[in-house]
Image (cartoon, rainbow over the protein chains, first blue to last red):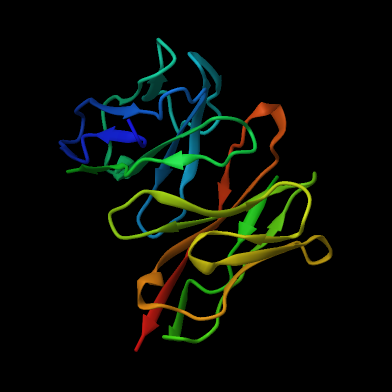
Length: 113
Length: 115
């Protein structure tokens, strides 16, 4: 596709429910990033993939958060046993190379009730 | 550790006036610097970036920014504001090491443009 696509755009989850957020990066982009943006804040890094390899997961806030990119294209961010503090917009970004600057998707707004 | 400080969470200007959004960073290595814009319910759009070379960087929509190493600053400017510039602006820094740009964002500055 022409840009980074994320689905769903909005997700309401009951506390304790598991959720899965999908990201389709720009075709051919090697690098894929996940960020978390809390209300009124700047995005915060969660994890990075180079092709299918997860090279950096230093930003994942707990072991309830898990990300994968098994074939080096589509990525899924999974949150288990969601908590209210997980409510945020989850942004996916992809880039062609280190100096390019990442292209962001529209994000998935997760609300945990 | 790297960090980004954006002075002023809200900036309001008149249409046609100069836009100045401030960004200061800390980094132990030569940084890569970025400005992104976010419109309501949208993702982030890259306005401009500095990696190496010329310190005055021109971006889309008439915006530019100047990298000043001595001041550790990367302020964003536009000579004449348009109503369509109203949005949230984020400054970000990356070391660019390890072959990928993990971005550290500032808290953002919301720009309002009034007639």
